[in-house]
Amino acid sequence: MLTLDKARIIVAEALKAGAAKGFKPLTVAVLDAGGALVALERSDGSSRMRPDIAIGKANGAIGLGMGSRAIHKRAEEQAYFVQAMNALAGGVLVPVPGGVLVRGQGGAILGAVGVTGDTSDNDEAAAIAGIEAAGFAADGG
Image (cartoon, rainbow, N blue to C red):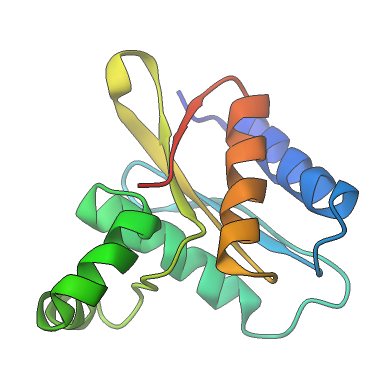
């Protein structure tokens, strides 16, 4: 189960991983399996829109049931499909790496983590570090 305590571990460890690797200031959002926000932190120096971007990355992963790296690939191959999904989602789907599904035992989707602030690849790496530190499996797509 993705509890508040586990979400706090994910956030802390994702930020710690980013700082250790010299990433730019990160923002981390954790959503539960229903897409509700559980935890959100924005590092000092992180720009104003970063919370919306982090939530959008995680929201896309939850909404489509795949990590945002897979959504990004699909957007390159089927731009109209992803554009339509974004419209259906009310414009809150951000189709670039950094939205990572949180999987529990048996592969069940427990939630998603969205990270933004550095390159998409680095955002994804920080999300994976946080998810794994909390004892879950990470699925970036």
